[in-house]
Image 1 (cartoon, rainbow, N blue to C red):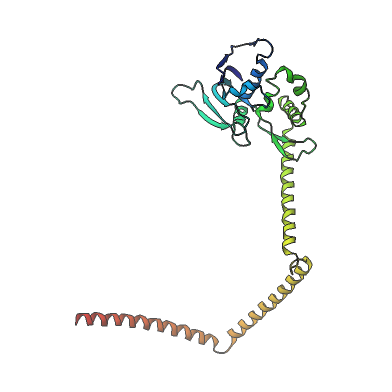
Image 2: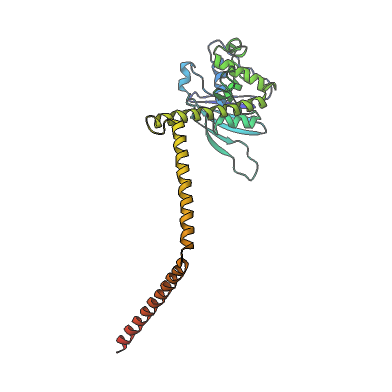
Length: 293
């Protein structure tokens, strides 16, 4: 990531950086630390507790190089997660229109944070919120988490990087360290995800079982043993009825003249159908003759 320039929209201030080391010099309380925090806000979430003069800003606009491409980024100065961030290619290849997208600042689906992670080749992973519960709730490691240890005001070095004041952020700090230096076990994380899915399925089955028990309470189907005995009785009765039906069918087939009667009935039906067709045809002819007369 290379920052080429930053514009504070609404504050009439543009800062251009040059290749190499850049120094920002100024007296105390002139906004140096705030400017560093605003640079971090350009790529991540806008923190709370900024000085009142920041309220005059509407957005932060910057030209940055991500990987091998330069981009123009327009980031509104708001703490809402769904704030739209506008991104456009600064120098598209000849003969092609520049890519331009608008993405929400954060979110599990397609977001500005995921866009930055992909462009910088950083894995987008979700990690357990509590290390003591590896199959518990998962939270994403966002671009803001990475920037917390890349763009750092001086007053955050001792309280945020070497051990964050907030336990939740401290967990994220440790995960960023493991990801950055190759200590994160992706295979174990995948197994924990699969185990969590199994636990969620078991919880769902348990809830369904409780619902069924409540629904069947005070009914003949409440007791499983009684229900199974009733099913066995009905199966036995059904077996008897099927056997009786087979016996009656055999007796009807063997009855004297039974088959001949069925054949005669079918022949009579066939003759009836032929006669009905003939009558219809003759009635049509009579109608035609009457018209001719």
